Length: 323
Image (cartoon, rainbow, N blue to C red; front, side):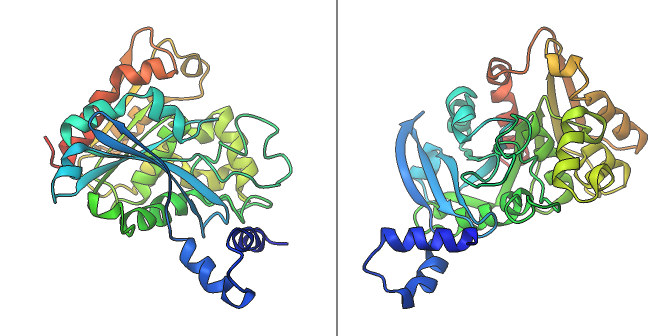
């Protein structure tokens, strides 16, 4: 039985008054609908915990959305900063520990926290290791079996997620779909950089905390690309910020990119992040607008992120017309 069929049956069981003849139209409608699981007042704004059935991953997908008080009290929608989480994380981690909402509330910036992968599947090996499979999608569209049917996170983040959010009758009017930036941490920093470079019409700026900057040259990336991609590391160059820049993909002038790395980060010390390679290729290609900052003693944790999240919010706000 396909995952779509399974989801359809589950939805039909939840709404028993619908006959089998109406299941198809119900499924089409519900897949675009956001269900509010919780509404929380924070920093004078509203945090919504949301879920929706995804047509891209064929699974339910969860996300969190913060709407600042300025958007709630005015008719002007808020620009949006999308935050991509790192390995093992869910939308809850950064929402609770990243402290993005404080500065975002002051500046009038909405925040979106998507999940890190599809969940609830029965793919062999999906939960065998913390750095591959569930909660470790690397924000790409897989091309290798058995992942390619559901692990389509690039399409989900860049196409379906904004469509679902901005078309929501209840929440969409608070959001400015024309002003969107992207950020992320670790694997999510990799995702933010690569999606920004590949979808230049969608985002106004990018920032990253301790990103996996050159994944074809590090163990994390090698494992992910050899597992998810039929073409392995060679295909992985299409999902590597350094290789994308080397290919000449960037046509947007100033990169509008901010990257922060802690010198006490063991993943940095062990060669998983390679921010120096990102700096080198920007110089090699004669590009401008990348600022990489090294912070003495900081590690890979949310203590590091929380220390500088306000500055990343300000970076996005500046390029979204809020500063």
